[in-house]
Image 1: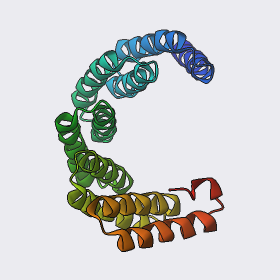
Image 2: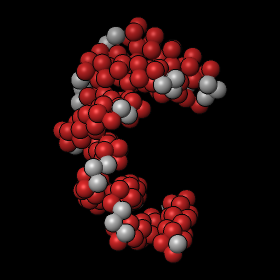
Image 3: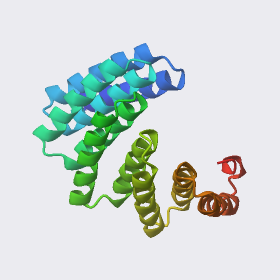
Length: 208
């Protein structure tokens, strides 16, 4: 009971600290909650908390500690054979590495995440990692490969009836077509995305 009360208190404190952008306080509380999870032998929980700690470091502008904490989280997730948590950690590492311009590493982690998402039947995760992998190829100036990945991601969003992500990913397809010089095709995808945003009442997203 004492453990649960302490956990609830820390989670409240972490949420409040993040709302106030007080990253130092959030990091301290996250470190403590990781300690508690490890003391109890709950390595799946430790992995999830370490993943949140990594994201907090990244939000605080500290990418190196963020990646180190992600690696610690992966060790914990693999210790418990927690494939779903491992999947999310790998994908988030890939996203951060892409933002840092470390494209080869980003592709490695995103491909690993894709493989696990396929293995565990995580269709939503697979769509996210396909999208982010497509963005890596866009950044690398390989729009043809990027387009194929975005197209697969759109199909998954449609299967999940996830209209906001259908619209978002159609926009990515349009951007890849612009890079290929296929302007008429690009316009078609942008128009489809804009129509969906309008149906969803999200006019702020119409400027793709």
